[in-house]
Image (cartoon, rainbow, N blue to C red; front, side):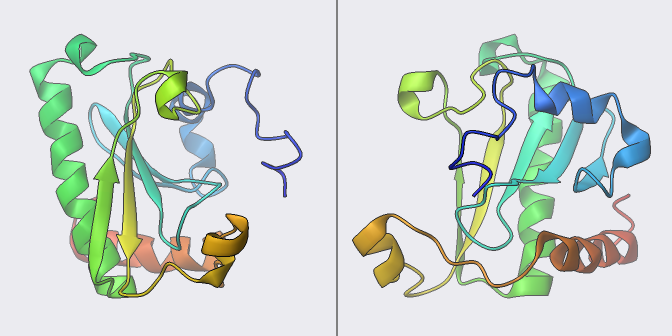
Length: 157
């Protein structure tokens, strides 16, 4: 509802940069993992349970602005996030994608980020088809604890 009512934080600066600068609030901001050049976090307005975002720590808008190290680091996080989500949620597949520019659907066009969305056979239900609404039954807080446990067990962070 916060997103629908326009209280998503858009227009208040870059929320990703705010998260990068406040490492003492990782649990509050649902930051799952920090690497040397990237962060892995929950999407606060998810398409599906477990919807994650991966972003470079630097405020860059496009892939051509990213260094080779940043691109490799983000790719590793794409792989690792699928492993972590696979252990906790057992999805049947994943959507991984990026939107560049507002016309393509980017809600934050100034800071490049990757969406990793777990998918299950038949997860497009009548709510989405009839009213473009998604139903997610698990809280971000609960899933955050589960995913952090796997990250620690695997020695990722």
